Every structure is written in C-alpha cells, then in structure tokens.
Length: 335
Ligand code: PMV
Image 1 (cartoon, helix red, strand yellow):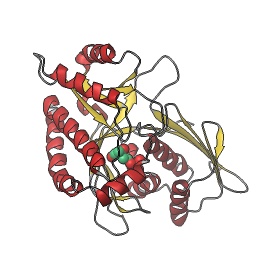
Image 2 (image 1 turned 90 degrees about the vertical axis):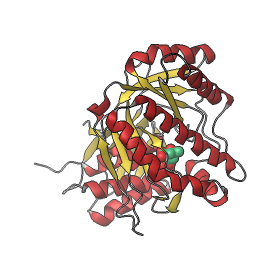
Image 3 (image 1 turned 180 degrees about the vertical axis):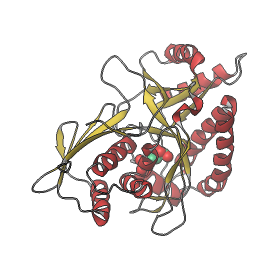
Image 4 (image 1 turned 30 degrees about the horizontal axis):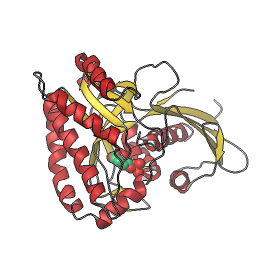
C-alpha cells in the first residue's frame, strides 16, 4: 500500500466549564491551573455555521504553507511550534495546511481549540507509527492550550501537571459524550468582532497584575472536584451554579487586571440577567451560562427547556444568532 500523502480531519470546539487562565510556561503553553471542558456538536443549521474546524494536510515539495478559509496566511509561531514538535518525534516532510472554520474566529468561540486539534489529528494520520495519546495532547497544546481538550468527546479534564517539560500536562476524558445526552447548550452569538485583547496577552496580564488571581487559583481544584461530582450525578442545578460562578470569577479577575480587561458587553450582561430571572421561576435552576474571552454566551439547559430558554433570550436580544449544540464527539478523519 502506498503511504498516505494527504489527510483531512474535523475537530470540534470545546467550551471550558472551569477556565484555563494563566501560563506557568509561555512557550510550552503550560497552565497555572487545571481546567474542565465540554466538547460541543452543533445541530445542523440553515446556512453554513457549524462549530468545528476542517483541516487538510498534504505532503508537498518545497516549504510549509498555510491557508485559512481559502486565504494564504503566514505560518505563525504556534503552527511552527506544533510542526517542530512533531518533527522532533517523526520524519515529516514539508506540508501544505488548509484550514476552514465554519464560525467566526477570535470572537471567544474557541476557534483555536478546534483548529489545533484538527491540525494534530490530520498530521497524525500521515505519520507512521502514529503519535501516542500523550504526544497528541502535547502537539495540540503547543498550538493552543485549550486545543488539547478538543481531542476528546464529552467532558474533558486538562491536568495542569507539574513537570517542567510539560510531559504530564495532558488532557483526558472524564465522561463520554453519551454520559449526559439531554444536556444542551445554546451558543448565543452577539458579536463576530475579534476580541480586543488575545487570550495569550489577557491571561499574562491577569496573572501579573490581578491581586484576586491567586485566590482563584487556590479555589480551582475544589471547583473541579465539585463539578466532577455534579457531572457524575447529572445534577443540573449544581452543574449550572458551578459553571456560572467560574465564568463570573474568570471575568472578575480579568476586570481586576491592570489595565482592566473587559470581554463582556452590555448584551452579555443581558444574557446573564435573563438566565438569573429564569432561574428565579417556579422550576428553579433551569439554565446556566459561561463566557470565554469574548462577549458571546454559552447557555446550558436540559433539552426539554430549550424552547423556553431560547424564547426568553430572544425577547431581550432580538438580533442575536443562536446555535443549538449537544455534547459532542472528538475529532475524526473525513478523507
Ligand atoms: O487556549 P487558548 O490560549 O485560546 O486560551 C483559552 C482561554 C479560555 O478560552 C478563556 C479558557 C479555556 O479554558 O478555554
């Protein structure tokens, strides 16, 4: 059989339920805290929006190249880091990388996570022997920290690790996608704008200047343990409260950075108010929100409550776009 010269992979986005924010090593993307995420799969939509990245990697003559959504781009440091790590482990010639996102990039929708997970998966299909799970985790992480979590289905923990070379800073699956099939997420797109400050710069500034930040780091192991119990028991109300509290705390430490970092907009706060108002109703906690480094909301609920929650959001924010998601599977090779 002739060796494979091209592979296409699709990888999902993940949204952090307990956020990664801060690096103990900038170039290796080693985090100051462990994090926990859910992998998302968007339901088929009218239009082209779908929360995944599709990447084709071809072995070529000449030099490495990269294009995003059909536009040639420079190979950035992050891409180069991933390729050079893989080349330190396996023989890999020059490659042409063509990547396509089916949703707005750099808008707090975790586009870099799906991008580097798709890249690692596509390159891996060309390697013989393929990389180990640990090496895949490291390769994706070198592109974008959160990308190591997009290599898995369901609920995923990225253990911060303590080794200086990052060999123990890897993601593992906590619960598979079918563990909690009724859990749904509505992604509320309020803005397609690029965020004003990148995650990399934002987390660095927060770690260096926020006096609340050390308290957050201390609390995270307990939060992760509690959230794992809530997930295990499929206790929605506990799950939602922990996720909202972590999101609020993350944005609070960002505001406590100096100069302050503000990712949420008035519209984001409208989402927050709407959810808390809903949760004061007779059914108790039926929804929870989280926001990454951007204004767009990820609203969780159980499937039977989807219509109620979307209607409430639509009343306050008639122009927002909403994408329904369920708990998703990991990356796959599609060609
Ligand atoms: O992986 P990065 O460098 O894009 O940083 C991700 C940071 C957050 O999305 C805000 C939180 C997270 O854990 O994904």
